Length: 354
Image 1 (cartoon, rainbow, N blue to C red):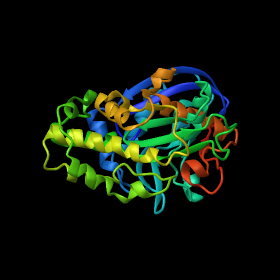
Image 2 (image 1 turned 45 degrees about the vertical axis):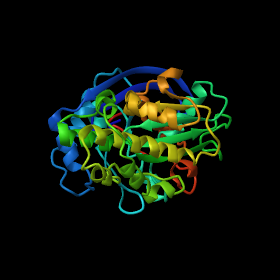
Image 3 (image 1 turned 120 degrees about the vertical axis):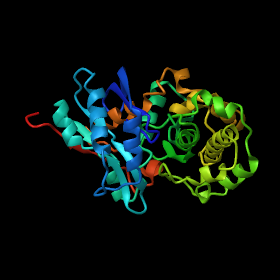
Image 4 (image 1 turned 180 degrees about the vertical axis):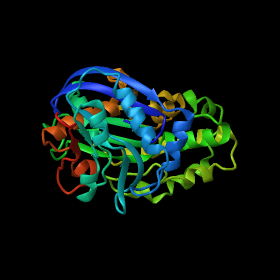
């Protein structure tokens, strides 16, 4: 998985039948260099047919490098790098050639997970909820639980573990809550040349500008009924709202925006979850976590509290989904992407002779 934060590629092995998690395997992280990150950032917003510059080669090399560090896998789930997402318009674009990766690694690759869902009227995102359902079963949850991924964009999955299958009615509700780390990363990169506000150090010393926060919450997205999804740059106005603030106040305000977006999203849950389990880079930001804990009516904890790996959950999800695709099982449903009926996505590319 290479997410919208553009920090690097996460890879993780999983033993599963696409329904039950049997065993977690090793994992690896391969960071992007500054030059690689710049190449990827330059391609954001591009569609198939556009000039992507060096970005496709960066994407291929990084994934080949990290996947080459593992032992034999029966199948690889390759998400690719999201460059543009407009499900009601031009569709969705995840850069990456799964067929070339399959040849390079001599292993079947499942890729292009989102296009079928979008073609059938879905949002194409988020796609991790079916895996979150399996995780809820793995941790032995007996009451509704929410998984909150704070990556470049935030997304929330409400799970009822009492249901038998993720595609069953009432088993899941999932949607993007709003911007999370991406605009904060953009802010500190633009102003300070940093890749992120590590440990919330900048936000911790700042003050939240309530006027900017109120203007942010006027965005119509928050009133839309889920399922719903966002592109990385759909909330680019956030930078404008904090333009006149000091670095610390801007970071504090944008962190509050991300946390408040989650609080708004929780109102859509069918019933209050017993706990919120946080995955993604945002869980490392203690300012963000404190804001969430103060604003939500249930415990807010990193997924490590239940024995999961918050850095690798998304990568594991695409390993899990790859197996579902191989078995012909659905990977999204009306309550996760808004697609009309449960649907399986993904292309399968096999290397010659395999």
